[in-house]
Image 1 (cartoon, rainbow, N blue to C red):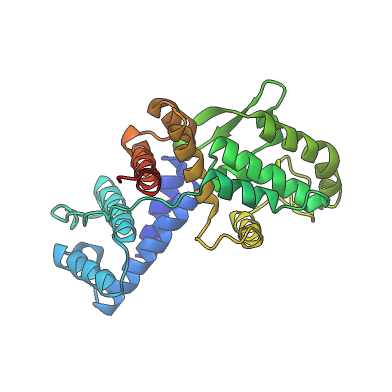
Image 2 (cartoon, rainbow, N blue to C red):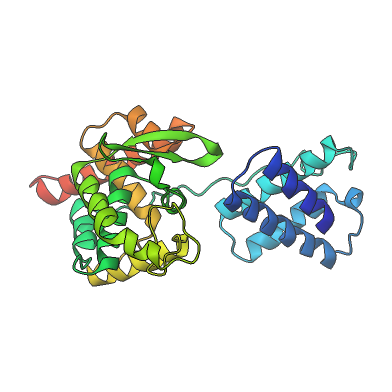
Length: 297
């Protein structure tokens, strides 16, 4: 099973061009399924049946896995078994009659404009790392970048004089995102005053835009850790992740009259139905404001 998983991962990487994050999720999901098969004493790939899949799903539910996680695992299994079919390693897929559980509908967490300002203002710009962090969070809120897109952003993808950046998102899709004056200003300051100092400490020079104080490219965990610190300094008690800034970016655009199609392009969503969740957030906020402000609400 492990050898087949490795072959599948290589196929998805080389032939399909999937990102490292996606490949890691595939591997973790399939390893978890492989461990389940061991407990069921299933040794041959052709002996896996629909009943095994259903029992695996039942165990996931018993362990409290969210439907979104279960759906992701099912997607990994479908792609894996479809690959085995194409390679004629199996005769039929046990996934044929398996339905995905319904997704639990929930609105993503967002921040108010005032909360975003409080987080950004909590950064001490009198230090080198503070000036860098200010540039990072200004950029994230100004563009809605995913944290993986931010950490992989390269110097030649910045076009500050023209007021935009390039980024490569999911599915290796390139998109152009305009920059506001505020974000542009702080990125320029970071590049002129700080980045060269961090880069001088690096044992392996990189063209990544944002560097740690040791001169290394940032990781997603590093961005999250820094954001958490400023959230606490801003006395915000709600759960805030880098993706919260992306959600807030989209919501605030729509609340201020932006076209849904434009927001879809800025976020890099392939399907506009993914973007439409933000219209529900805007309506919810309007209802909250109305209930609090209108005397006959």
